[in-house]
Length: 310
Image (cartoon, rainbow, N blue to C red; front, side, top):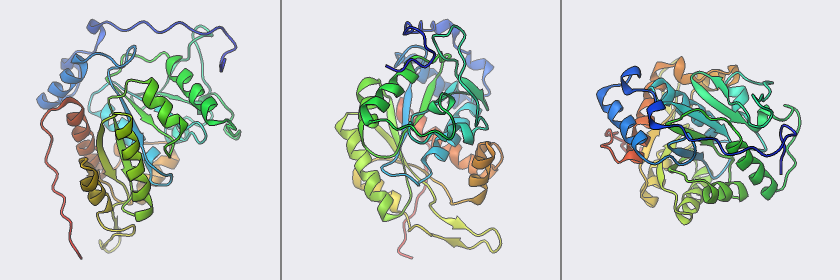
């Protein structure tokens, strides 16, 4: 359908043999994390070279889903996992900007398959590498879905333990197509505590339940604002709404993230905040660990979340 490089359709990539995987001893992992990686690598790959695919989704835009996907992927790479990041937002690709690759163009070794870009230890692909930054993708849903599937299948992904997919907002054609055409290990839902966001996040959970994709957990973004001057905490978007939503749908809470100016600044500067902000990095590491344990079934870290009426 979409002939990105004006050449014939490529043949599927050849799966990488088990022996080509990075030995656990070469990764800066703790013993527990080494066990998690062994479990991740022991399963049948969901597609050539990729062990697991995890969708990062939300029912609506504006909840920080792409920022969360970038920092989650960067955290997994920092933990030693071979990690990829796919920008599936055909209409508004933001991953190139958030990872310092705005204006970068796709390239190919053979004029058939696409090379992924590399940044911060991540293998990346985005429609943003194939279209002009100021051009709009004016495509109907089925066309956008087909373009995205080709983008996934025509990328020369290296051997990956996990591919994080930054989904577009909503529950439309693209979400359904990926859910039906890809063997997905699970989905992570991003929301804010605000009622408007929670309503749509609930619809996203329902959609994944309908298509039989496990919901690995919920991330409550912009959970609170901590004033850098006085230290006062303010629940700008409400209190623990994401926690109550998780309880309603019986899904785990992976973690709660603050509304933090520096997170936005680092995204605009093209650098994952987890590489610079230690408190944020620790929260994301807990989120990543909980997500991995939910994929593999390993014991999860306990996160204490308290809901009060204050």
